[in-house]
Length: 143
Image 1 (cartoon, helix red, strand yellow):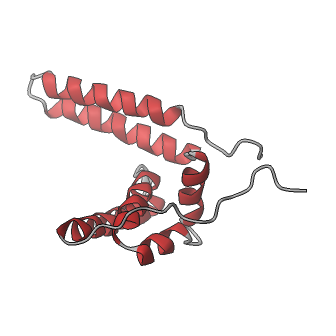
Image 2 (cartoon, rainbow, N blue to C red; image 1 turned 120 degrees about the vertical axis):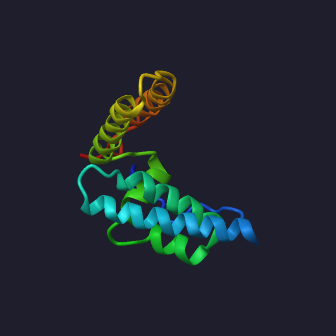
Image 3 (cartoon, rainbow, N blue to C red; image 1 turned 60 degrees about the vertical axis):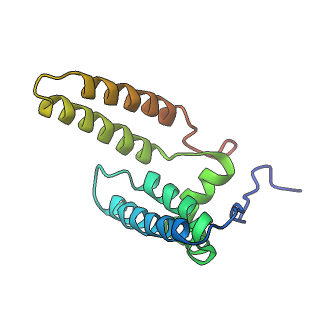
């Protein structure tokens, strides 16, 4: 009998870039990986989002690093769950929305009475927060 919640263990295929675009995406991948790893250690830093950006950047720039992150024993499951099922863990949702709220409050605090930047940034962050919160938190059919 087949498992109804089969996991796709192959990473998504993407067209690799070359030249300056490849170098830029490789740098973005390394930076986001570092921030993502820090997010696992530091409370309040949404590491999952940065790991997803890193795996995307590596998918376009380095098959070696893409496979490393996609199959990593600690971080790979989150990346694979996103790829296969579009799942964002509750902890990642809380961290992301909390940091967006803190950023919005910080913008209001430093705005010197000009409401335009905090209002625009807050509106964008609210839309992103709604999108994050409405993603599934676990794979359907599992506990």
